[in-house]
Length: 239
Image (cartoon, rainbow, N blue to C red):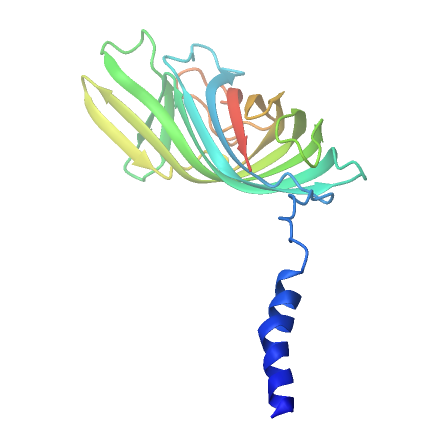
């Protein structure tokens, strides 16, 4: 009977004392990741400027560009403020200009300049493109492991595969729309630069190759269409 009394005493007073005599456990503070990366989603809006225009060719309105995708960040130094970024994205680009495109009975595209030679008015003449893009960037920034607001300068190279070319014309003679037109260069590439602070950054793209193949010439002028694009705008990076 004595043993049972001792056991009851231990259970009544010993265990609660052991449980409640422990020190309070504090909530851990946020752990700073010293191996952080700037893996980012990006979204951009640009104004597309056509350069190297043939005689009589000009832009006729606002030409819009949109882009978006994801970039994988690979730091190169211990501070992790210098890195290489490789990504995958999509872009849409429209170009309003006065190069008319008409397909003949053999489904071949003919290019001509809409100038004073034609005695009709038109309200729309443009072409636009959809592309899959691979951006490659050399990245410098003032970021730290605990700061999400910093200055950046990212410069690099972008390759795009244009998987859809569409031409639109609307005027007195009717409406014409063509898809997947031969004559465009499916592979587009150029230099890029983005610079700014935090989310807001200026963006520049300078094309290194023309939009059209070497064989494409304007029907009236007989000149090769060597025009390419410069894109100016804003790009936003989001973690």
